Length: 211
Image (cartoon, rainbow, N blue to C red; front, side):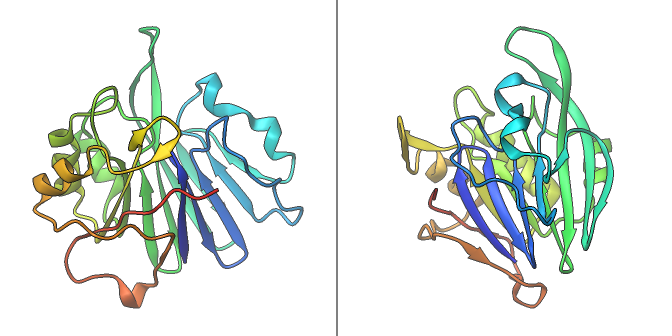
């Protein structure tokens, strides 16, 4: 399994012939879905800015809410959590857990706050957790750290952090790492992982945003 970060909230996970795009954003430059149906795209909520479904074409499998999904060798669970929209209305955020190659990958989507006990139970054991790094307009860093400790993943991959407009950078990462008691790792272009090489203790992986 290979994981790349495409910036903001979007990761692409490649497992066998499948490319799974978690949480793409409108400005993302992405390829068309493969004609063989091996492209999967997840959306955490119904916000117009994140939907842009038509750009993926008819061949992509679009996951747009809570439920259980099976696509070839991939299994997905969508867990509902609260979402507070900018206009003050309330709707759902979907946390996705993907099972592939004996590895569970969780993308928390757009959270309004920390995960409730019921959501943590539904998520279950997670090997890889994709979470916001925290900071203004997202989630407090200490809340992110508390959520990570509650989930207890083997690997944490932060998202939603920038040093300046249009430039991927470190931002709140040092604060989060200090909260977790982790030594700052060197950013990498991708993560290649298998069931056999999962770390014995929790590890934070920083990825460089790539097109």
